[in-house]
Image (cartoon, rainbow, N blue to C red; front, side):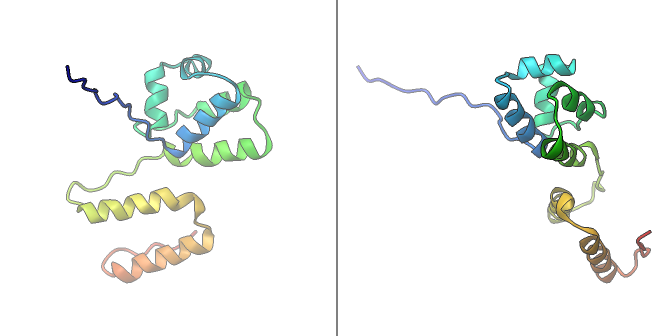
Length: 139
């Protein structure tokens, strides 16, 4: 008799920056996702969707998380850093090419690491490569 092995089932475990932060927070507090979802007053499905980047971080979460887990200092700053970028949505034109979408995604993913000088340089580059577009000047 020949024995066969079935491939193990896998779940989509891709995490956004907020997802990685929340998972570490759960591990540090010896919690599972159902407990965290309960603390936040949401379903585990919503928590999972936020962690994987399918849904944005609800506005109330950073304050709730900071309060429930008594975050301060570096942990609180990290929460603010990872929560804010995931709460914005930018819609691209349906005509955008895959390469244009990839460029927009790359800028969005790195935005939190771009300082004001970098933002000015990026605006100048955009002005150079799209001369027919209205110029944007920093406030």
